[in-house]
Length: 186
Image 1 (cartoon, helix red, strand yellow):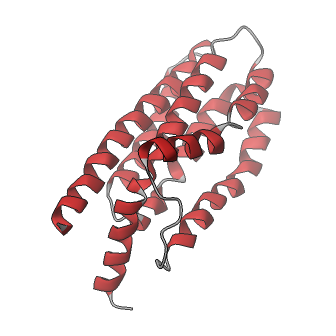
Image 2 (image 1 turned 120 degrees about the vertical axis):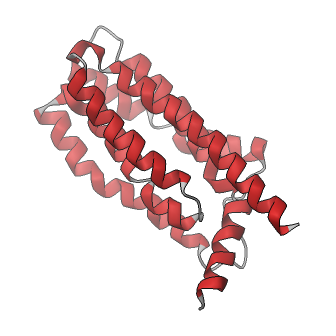
């Protein structure tokens, strides 16, 4: 397969799946809930457990948003389409580190989760043929670290706020990106 053909397949995924904005908006909502959880008067371990629970609605929320936004989860006749699912499953391999933090240093759980969230976006930059996933992989990962180093343990909820806002901004930029690509094809 030539690079031009590959780029056409990636651009088609970008347009038809709308750069995965249903998942990004869903994640932004979940991260707003995570920020709220980290304001609760509970110990870091219990807040971390609540974060795991709060992440549960991610897939159903993304499915609902895909209906509203008319995104495609499956792009017929595009051999790259199954790769998106594998890229998402790759995030699960980061969870042993997250569990280690939960057990050993739960006050840094929200930072670790934010870094994992950001880092797992990097391959989607290639997948959807857009720079925005790479840019926000760096912003969210390093932003989470910088905030954790700068904030007191009591103010770690700002990492959730930062991540949520970053994801909302990412969704806006991803929307502009697939709209621009669609306009170029017309």
